[in-house]
Length: 333
Image 1 (tube, rainbow, N blue to C red):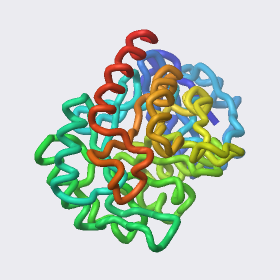
Image 2 (tube, one colour):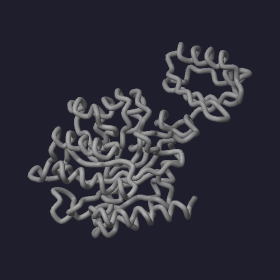
Image 3 (cartoon, rainbow, N blue to C red):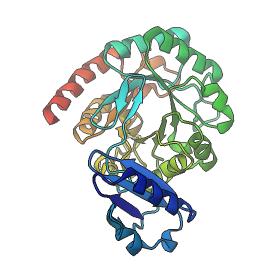
Image 4 (cartoon, one colour):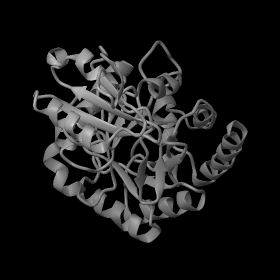
């Protein structure tokens, strides 16, 4: 159920209404916008008398909704969520580019790449310390040591860092990490999602390779309903009938997610395509269709990368792409 309060509603009367609803055992999510305040009721609202509430002087309208996702629903929160991370803004018109290697391999490697992507205009550094790989024989990441190297790169460049967490038991290692990434394979690891909901750190939630948009939003709901509103959605391609690309990049997901949810939406064209030469056109298309940012893999020596070298841009290629992204941004503004 959604209750829209009239513009200029008496704050004391609003507080009494919220308190009365909470006494019914229902949670209230309050979204105060520039022109109106929306109260989103979460729980068993069957016992709430909608007609009684609608008759109150401070209430503009009351309506019931059937969507199973509540906290991330745009009808509960009409204005875009804006997440600020070390000066970088995602959502609300801000456009953020996250760049870096698939895996952290050495101190020299990650610092050199961090310096290069910062010089090209990236606002955040990505790098995998814990790597979920299809084969148990592939490089699994440097784990805790990888996080230390990411922090060294952050100290050197000032870039906030983004890295993937695979288990709630590792949360202590991520204390100084700026953004915790939930990979596609863990999108429905509900115990992990609930644990991340207990933190206040921004969570970058990737769509699973065979998951619907509703399932992605329900995973976001797990995090938000546990107390953490700082969720960034990421479209990274899904499994279809494509036989030449790693995945199919579903760019229609971007405007659809913006319609359904107030959360920011970024796109990862690197994992979506798996081929470095296809990354730039898809990054430009993602920019044009309204994404709030991009996540792009960059490596200083892709042919010798320990993971996913085929989809990595070189620093020079990334710099060229950044200039083209800026042109697209100007064209659509």
